[in-house]
Image (cartoon, rainbow, N blue to C red; front, side, top):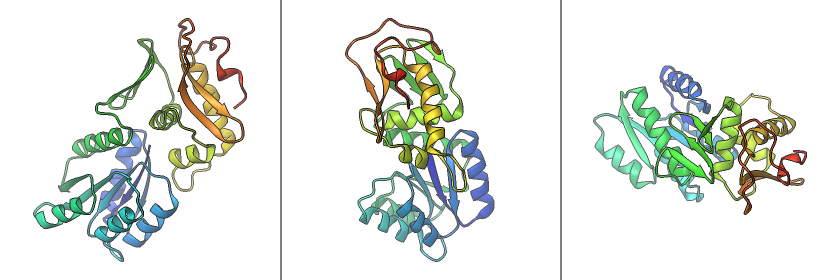
Length: 244
């Protein structure tokens, strides 16, 4: 999951970035409203944490422009503790949630998890797709009731595919959602991560299908092959034998 933080308090922004990256989110930050507006035009984010008191372009205007483009990106606004009018105005403009400064990082992270779950269409931290389940809060993946050991990058990749289960996701989209600015991750690297992820989860009626030249799709198949241990080779007939 990729998050954009728009906050002009550099100390606060750096603290939020470190905390969220430690929770395996890809995080970018900007310090003014104009930069936030430009980033939202050209980036693929899963959540915006937006300070309303931004220089150059207010947080209200950033939010207004975002919604006028028909963008339903979840938005968590940060406001002054005693400013009820700002909270109401922000919510009326289309924000999904708000937090008053100062706040506890643990609460902010819980709200981030709630908003990213909502973006995935989930009502709890546990997401199921056939025999595959992902606990977004505990960062635990299970297949047929057995824990699957995934790296941080593999888990992030799986979350993006789960968010769009049944729909095509291009390699470029995966790069956009997994990587922060300045991070060099090629589409070839995505192929490697897909290959590793397939080996760990394609042991039942769930597979990552390749659409040649276009991308990938997490899907369920009608037949249910015999269960296997995570990390073992997929059952015959699965898509994992395809080159990424």
